[in-house]
Image (cartoon, rainbow, N blue to C red):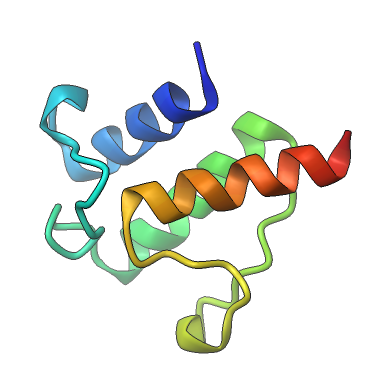
Amino acid sequence: MTIRDKVIAIIAEQAVLDPSDIRMDSTLESLGIDSLGLVESIFAIEEEFDISVPFNANEPEASDFDISSVASIISGIETLKAEQA
């Protein structure tokens, strides 16, 4: 399973959707994921990929981690994994 597939599965689980319903340009908000769901998604991603996501739930707009779309989240995780290697 690729990083993309794993991230989509995590987001789909939070949104209570089928992974096939998740588009790369979807925003978490458009998928019905609220701030608590966002935090839970970040924790699930950190656990799945054994990384630390630079995200502040209290100030998401001040974060270095782009959560504006599914594609940007996947890109950010790929970058974090590459830096870890």
